Image (cartoon, rainbow, N blue to C red):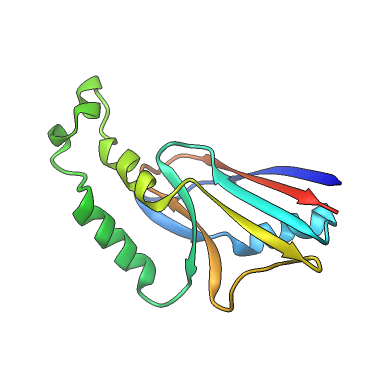
Length: 139
């Protein structure tokens, strides 16, 4: 069995945003030369997320609006976490909702995703570089 590890560095130019990272994961899979196995993709920051969904018009905006209704950023005084001087209490909650990681099967050297599935990075406290771990295990 082989394993491959790479960190992707991502910077979203706004506080909240999403990025389709499927092509970057495919590049990692090609580098690994693994044909059968699994890919783990996880955000290495507690205010960011990795998730699978469709790259359909308006959907990412819908996620952003829905998350803001569930855990609004303002007023920042509504979060006990922000009593420490921070302003990202909402970002921790949004990450919890969207998830930390995804695992995708590798079959015949390709990501075994559904026909419309894509891998996304979600940022909820951006404006700085953050890391995403890509770990591929298989043969």
